[in-house]
Image 1 (cartoon, rainbow, N blue to C red):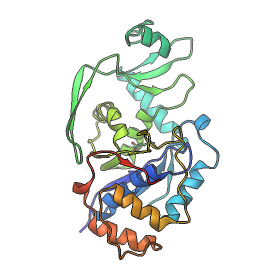
Image 2 (spheres, rainbow, N blue to C red):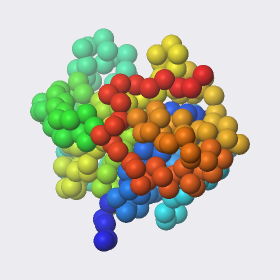
Image 3 (tube, rainbow, N blue to C red):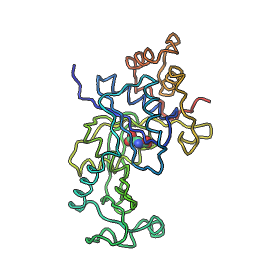
Image 4 (cartoon, helix red, strand yellow):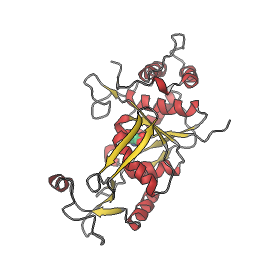
Length: 292
Ligand code: GLU
């Protein structure tokens, strides 16, 4: 049976993979492979100031050590600036994006309304500006494959997301949608910490006249203090010398039940079992805790 399923794992290289990112990467891999689909890896390196020079290489080496093999070549968002610039030009021309000179502080002091009347301006400002998406008041709904029916209320002006920052960097909200469309991604499996970003992303799909993908948001992994594992919360790097044990722990965090007979030192055998038995219905409702 041929399948058009195309999934992806899209880490931001702010540091090496930790247990939480392994869980996310593994879930997207299992969902794709169990459907006979493609699984792509995309490095979301949009902000060089937050990215250690060796982080991308370490992430890819870690995936390989865990036998998580991707299809096609790895995409780096740092090489996609022309595509992002084209999309911004198109959105500005359609007047669904606008140039914003307000600082975060000014917006916060003004209940999210633009004191510089950015939404009304038609000329190009002479001072540095961000580009924002112009939202309307609306409710965006989708059926999340794990979290069920979702409805997100978008507020015009106050929720308008940044597409390009004043410093010139392209923002996650823009790049993720441009690349998911360009790469033909049909299914997005990622952490539920990104749930809040989904409504505006769906709006962008509509504006760019692209079909909306299916979403599956998985519970995020937290540390003993209840914080999401991340570089900021000092999540330790994965130990690439024990890939089998890491995969088994990650499977349990995803509510899967690998049998005791699986050889803990054979990542390929563990993944083969996990693809054959992948059951999103068994994902836990809540956050899992990282192994101590
Ligand atoms: N690059 C984002 C992150 O590492 C994930 C993007 C996505 O899956 O939509 O948090």
